[in-house]
Length: 458
Image (tube, rainbow, N blue to C red; front, side, top):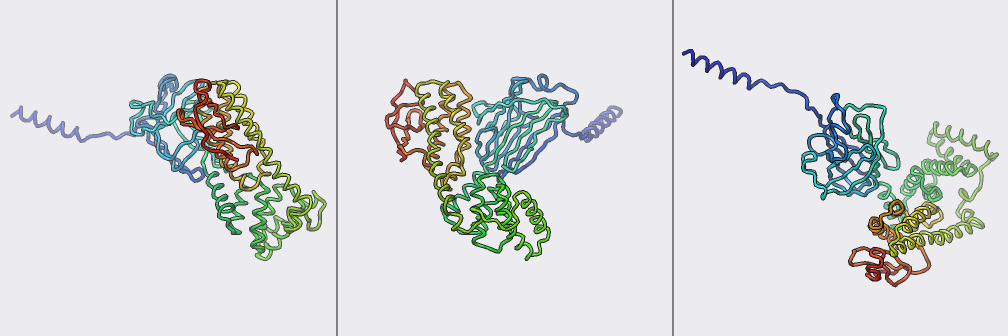
C-alpha cells in the first residue's frame, strides 16, 4: 500500500510539473517594417540580437565570415518594384540579406534563396550580387542590432542603415520613381500630344520641385495659363519658376496677375505674400511697373528677334555638343580592342566628365527626354570602368554601357556620321563603332574579327 502511494504521489507531481511553464521574451526579438520610396515599397523582416555585455564584432560576430545579419531565420528584404540598391539594379522580389563584416570594409550581399535558416544553408552561387561598404564608428552604442531605412529625400533616395555596438554601415537606395514620372511626361506630351492644362502644370511643378530644366518648366506652366487664363494656381506656379530663375522683372508681372486672381477668390494670405515679394523685387530691380521680357510677353514677342535666333543656336549647339560623348565611348572601345585597361579607364573618366558637362536645357524636348532615360546609367557604368584596372571587369561593364549608349544613340542625334551596332555571338554582347569593319572589344586580338553589324544609326 505504501508503494502504491509513493507511485501515485510521483505521478501527480510529474503531471503537475509538466503543466508549469515560464514564458520569457525571445532573446532576439522579431522586427518588421515597411517604407515607401517613390512608388516602391521596401519591407524587411529580421531578428534583433542584443549585446548583453558581449563584444560583438570580431568576437560574437566573426570578421571575414558570412553573417546572417541578425539572428534566427535569414533576414529578408522585399522590393515591390525595380530599385537601385548600393548602385546595383534589383528587380522586384524578396531576397535574403547577408554580410561579411570586416574592420575596414563590409561586403553586403543580396541572395536569391530566402528559405534558409541563418547562414547555415547559405549558397554563394545564389548571390544576386555583392557590394562593398566602408563601416563607420558611431559615438552611440547600439545595444540591440537594428536595420532601418532613413534619409528619405525628395529625389526618391534613402539609406539603409545597419547598426550594432559602435559600428554602422549605410547602403544607398534609389527608387525608379523619377524614370517612371519622366516617361509618363514624355508619353503624354510628346507621343500622345496631350493638350491638358492640368497636366502641363503638374509637369512644370515636378520639374521645379526636382530641380530639373526650369526653362522647360516655365514653358509648360505658361502653356497651362494660355489654356486657362483665370486659374490662380497656374499663375502662382509661373511666378515661382520665374523667382527660382531670378528673373525678377518677369516675376513682378506674373505675380501681379496672381495677386489679381487671388484677390477675386479672397485668398488673403497668398495675395499678401506675393505683394511682399513684389516690393522686394522692385527694390532689387528698380522696376515699379509691369515688366516686359521674352519670358512673360505674348507669343509673338517671346519668339521674335534675337531670342528666337538664340533658341535656334542653342538647339544647333546641343546637337554638335554631343559628339564628345561618342568620341569618349569610341576611345573606351578602342582601348578594350587593344586590351589596354589603363587607357580604357582614362577614356571612361573622360566620358563621365563629358556626360556631366552636357547642358540638357539646350536640347529639344524629345532629345531631352531620351537623354534623361539613360544618362545616369551611362555615368554609373563609365565610372565603374574608370575605377577598375581589371580588363575582364571592364569588359563586363562595357556590355551594359554599350546597351545604354545604343538606347541613347537611337533617341538622340549624336553624330552626323553613321553609328554601327555590332554583335559578338560568342560573348552574346553588342557594342557601337564608327566603322563597319569589326574589331571586337570583348576578346581583342584573340578573336578580333568575331562579330557582325546588326544595325546602322544614321
